[in-house]
Image 1: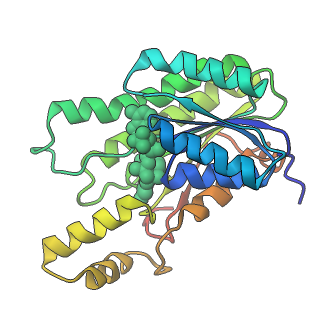
Image 2 (image 1 turned 45 degrees about the vertical axis):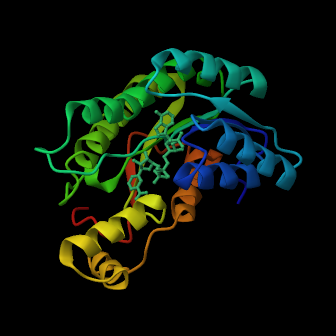
Length: 263
Ligand SMILES: NC(=O)c1ccc[n+]([C@@H]2O[C@H](COP(=O)([O-])OP(=O)(O)OC[C@H]3O[C@@H](n4cnc5c(N)ncnc54)[C@H](OP(=O)(O)O)[C@@H]3O)[C@@H](O)[C@H]2O)c1
């Protein structure tokens, strides 16, 4: 299948580790030129170097952004577009959620995490749209999370952050459709990043069980009984960015092994 991705140009936030890193590597394998954005300059530079060595025909630049510092966003997008010579794809992946109960999470943490997602994602998109609208294959992909659709225990913050991300994805799809830009969300279930290890150890502690038993317990909620790997998310991010996904917009696709109960 020709995905029409070779020589396309993408910005990926939160690219230095976890799911974002996997998306960067998957795009590079398809010949997409990349700006990998993050706070951790060393990790972003390392990834750009790794991609440059593995895929000599792919241009990959590391660009600093701190989404908690709005003044860094416009320069990061401008620097990326200048280095790549245009923009076709924006992947908003940066973010996460502070763990804790509603009564325990301090205001500072609500403000900090919401500044990254969805607010940072909105700011990244606002700066990127004038460039995306010049592309004939413009894509925005927002990485949300299944807790945004179905809050669960221990997801006091993951619920609203990802719900907000889903809602704004729909608003963006409505607003940017006339500019030829598709906008979609991907909602990972619990994915094997460092967050998975945290979740396993919290579950083990809460129930006084071993790490192995905690992992087994978490997987009982997943009909397929598998841990989601970052590559499960990045494979879908490749397809949604491709020419083949031209008619898909304003939707969210779960990648959760069937854990979400609703359809
Ligand atoms: N893993 C899961 O189970 C799971 C489940 C549902 C949804 N998700 C979503 O998937 C996305 C990626 O998750 P992940 O598990 O891969 O996360 P991760 O390994 O914790 O990576 C988070 C990324 O976001 C970046 N980031 C955080 N705060 C930032 C800021 N202020 N400015 C710029 N970059 C910032 C981090 O950069 P630094 O290194 O600079 O902090 C890092 O690259 C997130 O949006 C998350 O909500 C993940």
